[in-house]
Amino acid sequence: MMTGFELLVLLGSLFGVGLSFLGWRLRSAGEPPRTIPAHARQEYRTIRLIFDRDLDLEDLDVPAWEDEEQMPDPWGGGQ
Amino acid sequence: MAARLTRWAIFSVAVSLIPLIFSFIYLTTVGPTPAFFDLISDGELLLISVALTGAAIGEVIDKKTARIKSRLASGGGCFLVASLSSSYFVVVSAQDDVRKEIVMGMSCALLLLGVISAGLAMAASEGEEGG
Image (cartoon, rainbow over all chains, first blue to last red; front, top):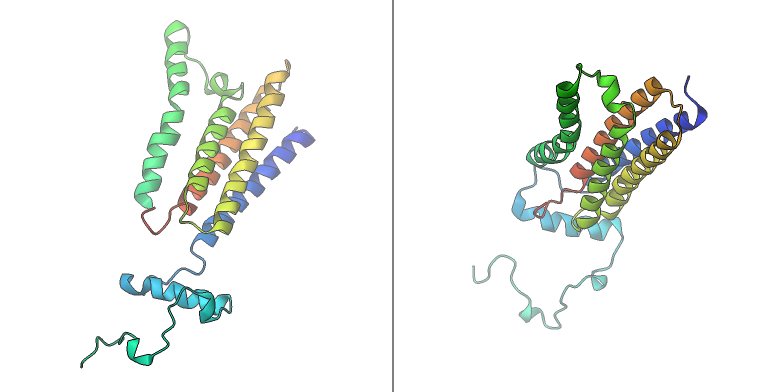
């Protein structure tokens, strides 16, 4: 017959395994789905960050352009 | 992830069992074949469980790529298993009249839980940026 201490050790260890399982599940939380190609994964994370934390663009390290002429053309320019 | 876990299973789990294998070989050569019971009834498996979970905690702490909540949960789970295995080993080694069959069962259970916990922590600590 197991003593109370042995039961406590066993149940505590089971709880520890549960915590580790939770950590393993949390690892992939919020990560881009595997269907998103590798070159777009960082953009996915940035967009998630903005929406999840309700951030303003001013909070991010995004350069602000006074003059629209200085803004880089996302389509490559000159087309 | 599979390659990493396989490497961990071979070089951490299997290697940590080598002392028990040598102990079995030694006891076999000096006398009659020992029972599995004799090899692990003093709580040797508890020390192996502590070593495995301790290594996993180090791995979780070292990785900066994994998320903080994930690292905290995995490391905390491993720490809990390591602490309880250590405390049980202290109790077992301090007593003279231990019930060996209970100690053997508890040792096997705690080693299994330690391996699962450490494996989950190793899997959780793998970061996408180079792991």
